[in-house]
Length: 500
Image (cartoon, rainbow, N blue to C red; front, side):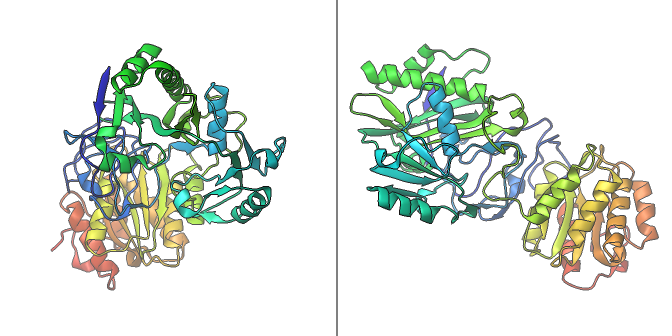
């Protein structure tokens, strides 16, 4: 059992850390080494570290992280100037009312509330006031966006709820409002369980700075944020929580109550295959009992078939991350579902003019960053791999180049072994032709060394498209793509991919 407090006050810029699936991560700027298997990462749009220097491919992303005093990146951190294009696939967030239903069923106190609109309106509103009206959204920081409002009468409650329904909070339309009884309390705490990606173990996090963003607490008062690393191979028992909380200064009834809650929360974390289970704030009442005033639960999407959530509606169709899928992204996902073979549909739409078809583990991040560093404006982040079929590549390429803002297409990948370069080339050329465009005029760079590259080279040469292999570094390929996208394509200037 490890008990520790978090050290350094945050990290200046966006940072994501999670599980790494095999292989060695590529060195900064080197797209020729490392394999991340099924790992998927999404690049950031602005600010912070370059994706290629994060040394990891990021899969199933946590919301916030922190930096430990020894320099290792752990659970929570201050994230400044962050704007991610999207989340990686793999997690589903429950709404607050759904998460609280789970807590209540597991014996943790929650306020009396009424979901509007709901299937059953059994609780009269006048019995709740004074109350708090809270929009039900998967976005964070809703209070700062006007999504949490205190009401003191039935009339004001109805007016506020009416205003909340149908409005947008962080780009998500509000369909439900939770009206909860306002509860007086003595203190607020934070309690959460997530994964420590470096220790490869779950970690419980506790702070007496509840009711505020935990990253603020970690930044300005790191000595008040504490963690407990959990051994997943052994059953978590009450004495583990009790020893931890005793070390934090709790005793008597408060210790007994908190010990029971921590034990239940850890058990729920494993039972629901969660990535994150967070109660903030966990309020202490005058009688030293505790009430969960807010709760977030993020569940592994791959575990939805086995977790006990049959009562939750439309769970598998929920948008992930900080925004909903665009129509373009939804169509790309449908293309990926055409065939189980390979991946060709992990797409994020961007407001640029250069279409990107990229891949190769962490190299896709390097390529995306390199294009931006050269002044390019990517129209998308699109990762393929695992030897997708010609049909999938064709349909995806047709979707990319059919966008009205897309002028050119760059195909840049790492050295491939489990993806045939000639099949990718066939799909790309067919997709461009079906979109009514000339492959020679549309493709600015085609760099795909590895399996099947001789056949790929012959096919591209037939259409007048130079093939680039290992002799053309990824950064140079990105620079060449940007240069050609900003002027008429002159493929004759390059022979076999050599970049001057």
